[in-house]
Length: 413
Image 1 (cartoon, rainbow, N blue to C red):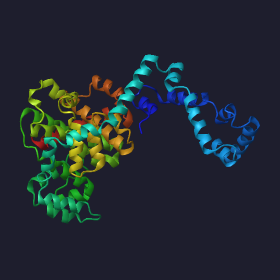
Image 2 (image 1 turned 90 degrees about the vertical axis):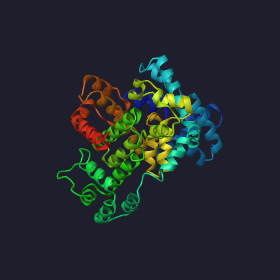
Image 3 (image 1 turned 180 degrees about the vertical axis):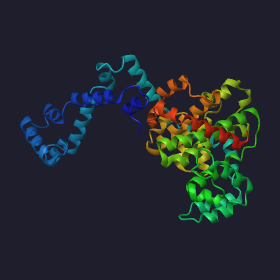
């Protein structure tokens, strides 16, 4: 679960060394369990001293030693532990006393953390509203549309261990559009390894079944949306660019997540397309800067519908039976701190998608690595989560730009 100290670290409010010092100071300031037992008349000091001597030999907690010796009951220990916790100094007080944070900032961050906890607890509300929406019905209907019979058969084969590449290729090649699109992605900057892939069989052999599966899945899902108006064009360009950038970022930070990063990028804003296709939210009525910036669209959606495109998109990805880690990353891409409740791959993949989306926006304005981009990266919590310094992003910037451009050309938008 996300804790207040973890929140302060991940938001960059408190440096790791200062947090470690505060936690040690907090722990050292709380009374020992033995002292509390003496104060409460549950044991004498001489008995506690003997128990402490036993504890040092046995290397177990003093409470366990006292219970084993019949000095305290388990209920006694629980009562003393609760008292010990109550008497422990507040972390905010410790951080303020050591000069790490001002009182106003520390209290403000704690209030923000509590809001995040409440948002996580209330997440089922928006999810249920999204589940009963017309847009979600569109997503259910899309189950019938995105995968041709050839793609369905190929995906079933790709899920098998040690599947023969030639067999997968022979099935996929009956779908000409998927064949062309898959080869173009396989030969793009995101995946290219030496000699280009001349056939689908080459792609399966060189990239692996997992990579081909995610490429085919993503391309097929985007094929559901045929809209060509301004909003659809902007959104699909952003989706494609984010997927490409996410794949490269994952390769640089978490190579084992590279394939799902591409798929998560392709689906992160699919909720927008479902809302647009269903007509449930009128994006065309919004000002151009709101559409192109994209940063506050989810707020406007939530105010109007009671849920946003991220919640709807995560639900749709789950309905389509894509990997759970992808569904979670889609759900949390506007509330990345929520992903840290789950930790592990969910937190990592969410950070990749969020940073990829931010970088795609920067590149949509300018393909150059600017001082503004460098400043943004220096304070970006997701870049920090991934261990990416601005200089590391600058080193792969040209690759990111090229990958983004190739994906945009692939969509033909």
